[in-house]
Length: 94
Image (tube, rainbow, N blue to C red; front, side, top):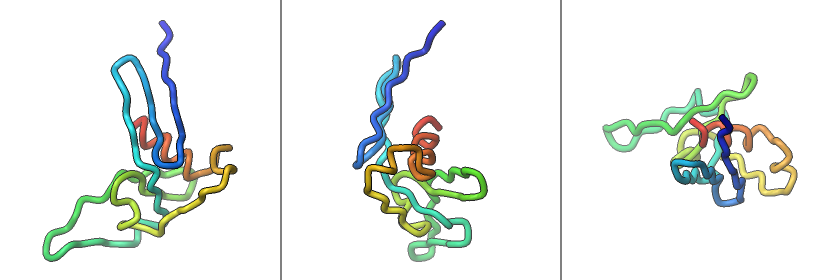
C-alpha cells in the first residue's frame, strides 16, 4: 500500500498534505537553544519542538526565536537540503 504525501517548503512555512488533511508549520528556526532559558514573569513558557540533526540542535515552529539564536537563511540554497530545512521538515512530520 502506498502512502502519498506532498510537501511545500515555502519561505513563510512548510506545508504537508496527505490523506488526512494538511499541516502548516511556520518557518521559524533557532539554533543553540539548549543553553538558553526563557521565562515570562514568574511562569516558564513551554519550549517549541527541538530537533537534533547530527550534533546540532534546532528549535522549530512558533516561539522558536524566543528560545535560541534565529536562523534567517533566506537564499535559495536553503531549499537544497540545508540543516534548518531538514529541521523544519522533521518538525512538520513530528
